[in-house]
Length: 592
Ligand code: AMP
Picture 1 (tube, rainbow, N blue to C red):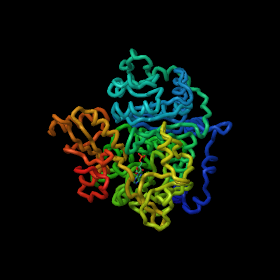
Picture 2 (cartoon, protein in one colour; picture 1 turned 120 degrees about the vertical axis):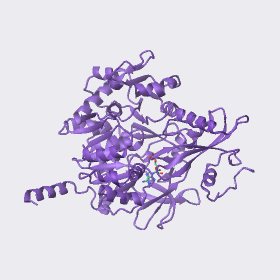
Picture 3 (tube, protein in one colour; picture 1 turned 90 degrees about the vertical axis):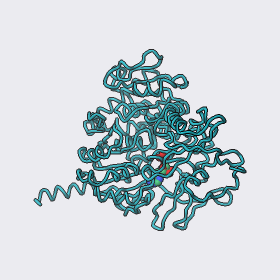
Picture 4 (cartoon, rainbow, N blue to C red; picture 1 turned 90 degrees about the horizontal axis):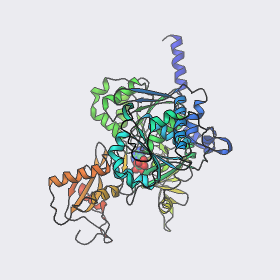
């Protein structure tokens, strides 16, 4: 090799020296003040996510640097520099002001991964509003539930999603004052102007100024609302504050190993927390370029994106990796990934074979990491500085203390010190992106804590080397394609069908997507099980809940097992479905 190219190669290697080289020393030397000091902040101790991610960069040397490259479904590419993004967020903030939307009001966004979504999320934050991105595959019912719970004042959506999902529930959205519609295909003709408070977003944006003084929010001021599912009741609105940005910064650095020259691709949709924390905030904080694919999963398309867009850091999910594995090695062999240098995944257990598949096909093993909506950012990870233990979630990041706990005698949890013992995964409370409450549900929030510990609801174990291993969930929530689904929400939608007497919903293990949603239904008098009724119920649920949440399977049952207090025993339904021991059935109602 020529001397100059050797030097160039060495320089490149030096540039991409992992951010986290000595795990123990970095953990010892780290505290959250360090992360806080890396942020710019605003006068008077104020902190605003939009300022940290966009505005400060646009005023400096990153002005013309690519922030996002959007790959449209139809092959169209749209690039936004940090300067462009600053202008768009200012325009959106001015649009809100023009509509008398004030600091603290809630802005919801329901859209695919289009530039307007990103401008609205960041522009809403810049205006001091709390923002809640909703998954565009939700049906009308989950949309209405979340908007009403979150007291949405503004909804940003597209004309087609509005027509398909929102128009029919508009009357139920009592707090909603404005709907801002994105015209598809540049046309504005689809925008209904007859309903008061419905506006064409493009037109308002074009007329707005691209100058806006970022609202100096407090670090503990509400910034993002992410809805997550519990076993019972309505979804929980996890409240996240502007100060969370310190976690996004530190985890972008240590868990995703972001470097300024990176091209980063987070495949998650911003309707889920990963797509906001790591599809929007963390990469912008680090001034890197993000790829956003507007299309759905397609193995060939994904390999092509990795190759053509020269992705260097890739953050994806186990279901996607399993689907790539299924697509077979022949397809993968048609592509090379010379720029790729770090791959991570999150959301559900990553099987060891998938880690090794990464090494074989992408040339890199996959670094699994763990976190949840409530933690706001990555907490436990297989970091570059440590050997990956395939099948493990890794070790706690700098600033994070994790433990395995069990309930002690007096109801206060105690830490299990011995390795390899199963218990609940807990985190020492107080990291910056920790949720600050569930909307209107103080009691449920309080239950997340015991003394100094935040209880995750996950069962896990820690090995002698300090690696954490996922065991399962403590509750009945379902993980399907990495998305958390509450059985109660599905049961409620099915109960609305006139034939249904009672419903129990479980997650049925599935090799590809982790779990599929399966419902057991007993029918009211006068209705008989039939294939036609099964199809009708599936269609009913899909229409109400949307494809992301609706059950894939429905079985009829004459009765469902209930506790003596009348609660359907999903655990038992699941055990019976899987042919597993039924466990403790002492609370089972006689005859069930
Ligand atoms: P969500 O709040 O939707 O992000 O879901 C969080 C839940 O996903 C966690 O509580 C875990 O049950 C699961 N989860 C996330 N990451 C992992 C992982 N790396 N391995 C196993 N389960 C995971």
